[in-house]
Length: 154
Image (cartoon, rainbow, N blue to C red; front, side, top):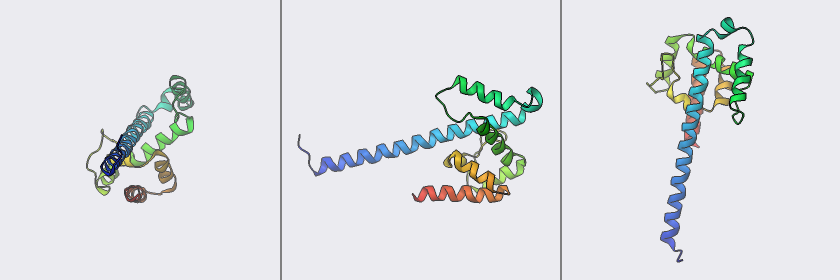
């Protein structure tokens, strides 16, 4: 085989496209996982799970999900509580959620109190850090946007 400059340039382009595809896939996987977390948090709130099934319902859901999906991480009781906390943080004021969408420059929202699509650009761990340290939705939005901006620069 003759490896010349043109071949090396072509190979470099292939590698760049592959890395780009990997990054896009990771963002999509993150988006789907975050949407799941949002919806589970919403379900726990909307179904009034603790009132309906008792104080240990979150722990039981955790055990049941861990049994059903032993290869998956993220179903600990503390993480399920975080999902609920995350949903409540943003959805307690529907007007604030509309503001969230406007402020992060993404007009699309999934569902009635859906997760703003740009939230998908922020990893789950960052979302938890943001809501546990911020006093308001406005402050949280500032850090979400900073996280997104920083990711774009890197």
